[in-house]
Length: 195
Image (cartoon, rainbow, N blue to C red):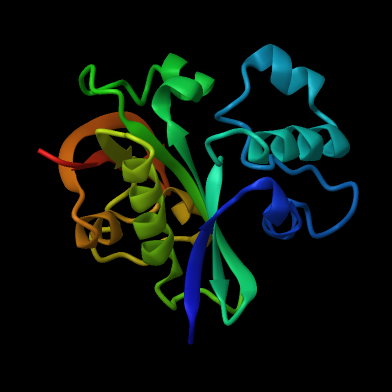
């Protein structure tokens, strides 16, 4: 199995759409924008075509809004991330507070297509996001995963990631949040780059 992780840039937008568009036309989809939009913009972009267009514009910006994982050339996974300061809802969050004033990048969510799950793609995506953030001058990257503590949790609630995956990629626990997923508290795990 050959895995490649690449930035979600404009020339790969069709693959972004394959990962994020609803499977049935007319079904609501967040397009991984819910953390990036303020309430006013979210209301204005409530329709599917508008959200698609907004994500397409994000892929045209200098910093990619995510990374795509390919398995043997087929798009199979996505991670949504970026500088915390550019993620409005996270900046205003009352449950996921900044730990300090380090201008971190934040990992928001993962999506892995059925048929490609349990193959290590989340870890590959996290590694790709970390490398990309470091290459673009981030002093650190952090995520807000849960620790299932040995329990099997619903896959739909694990979009935030699992603490052990972050730890395996060199992330350290630096705090907790007031947020939960799958009934578990979300942690703050950070990887610092350089000296």
